[in-house]
Length: 394
Ligand SMILES: [Zn+2]
Image: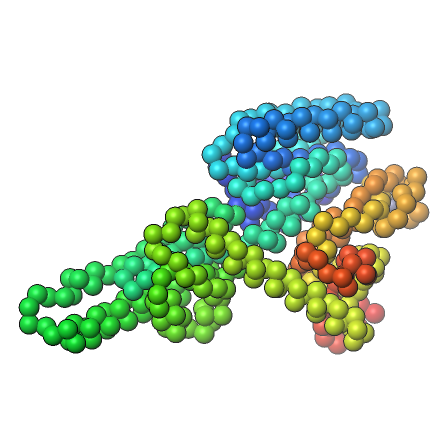
């Protein structure tokens, strides 16, 4: 499908979180010829940028030489459309940039991110999304609440960019009127004040609707306040808590992000191991699974996949028909067996990922898994079908 007019030119004037990039819409886009250039660059310093620029330039030279003559002019235009983004100077906090560009479609997307990526240049029939998809899987947004018994600050962390959304505090000293109070009375009043403060914080957190769409919430701070708060949270929100960090209130923001990131990443690794185990269990039980790129592709096309499970950094060489979009693993034939169309080389996992995006299947990337590797790096957990769906699909 061609890109929609409002989706042709996107280049935000600030760093973007990977969760802001519309992977669904990007995965809809394809053409019959190799007109989409995807560039992933490191850009965390000027020397990083220099190295990336010369890498990209050398990839351009190789591509230019290996392209059939009818595509050379379009590639030259596309590459020059990307040049300004490649050459543009470094922004504070930037670590990588992703550029999707096609001159024939007047298509230009340029994202600067605060996350690291591996350098890559790909010319294909569609934007190459696998590296972004993996980053997204690792860097879902999450909340971090830093609190003690009298201060609370709520942050949302998106791709390592931290935004403070809410803060509240209580001045316990003010409640301590001079004279007359015994230490015991003071302690009792203080305890009551802390509890009502934490109850308010719990209400604020519960009211935060965006938390539902995030990876979860990290509770951080010194002492017992985070455990007390935990008990005041409703069950639904308590389940969203992904970890506790025992750290001082004065922890620097960069350190907070680093520590929070580790908790969030641990949670993601646990989830992906769980998915891989679920796939394995289904295979052993002989139900609701598909593996082998052909079966997984067909299950995706039929909308039967619940979760597509992919091994990170894995490549399955194959080809796609530029006319009918049929793709499969293995050596590239001159022409497509189904329609006689021209073919081009692809990583089959990229095509499976895009198909999953288009058909609404979840995608899980798994770092390392012996079983997943043994079945070719990809598998699918299928949906339960109700009897009506079953009749339709048979
Ligand atoms: Zn074909």
